[in-house]
Image 1 (tube, rainbow, N blue to C red):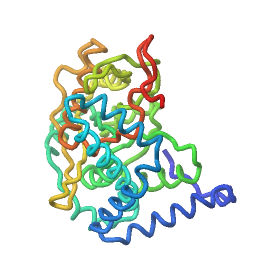
Image 2 (cartoon, rainbow, N blue to C red):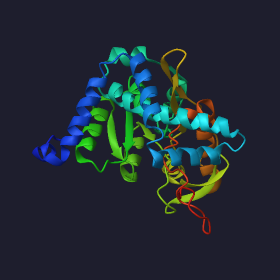
Image 3 (spheres, rainbow, N blue to C red):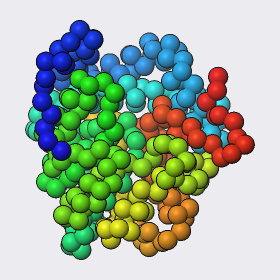
Image 4 (cartoon, rainbow, N blue to C red):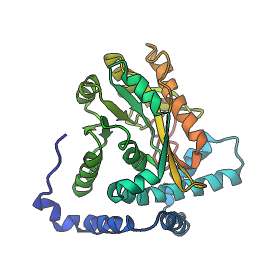
Length: 307
């Protein structure tokens, strides 16, 4: 993908609120990291009960995925998840405008040898991530270790925001691919690149299968196993987590999935979901519970998000 151009239409009045928001985001990058954490906690306290729709989605997801927890435990986890979502806004600023030195000092990486081993097969690598609130900063940190990391992304409906997302991610990575451009993903993997793909979103029943995720039958994309079958590329799960005790991030790469794809779509989707579950259990409050992961339901089931 070519670097986008900043055209005159992006300065139209309808984009002025976005310009103001982005300017504030740019200023946040000058804050010490400890201040970012404190501010995210303050904003979470102020806005949690006001963001009723988002609060309902978070609480619904956590109720579904953690039935063994007490009501008090689920309430506390929901609050922490909202705080983590707010912190992700600060991390966008740090990811886009933080210096290389800042990012280097703020993270450590574990399991890079799994990528190196997979690349020895000369078939590229499919790097399966999930929608953690740390996803943006994890990507910025990982780009420091891989010069052939290509990111997939879902285009924003806000033209100006999309311009900045593309510009900033292209500045650090080896390239960008739209999340539905399967042909370009295949081409990039076959060139030997490491292609980052996040399959834990609900785009409806087309090209998906229902498979268990956190104990819930979940509409799961088939893209991962199809790309793996067409390329022969190893599939490596990865995620980034905040380590509050160290005021750092850890980027964790797991060994490549065994016997993947197996030829059984439901079994393969279950394997991907299980890999993501293992990550969530390490830091449950940092997963993006604010998105409607269980939006599409099996026939006969009602919506889980109705208020």
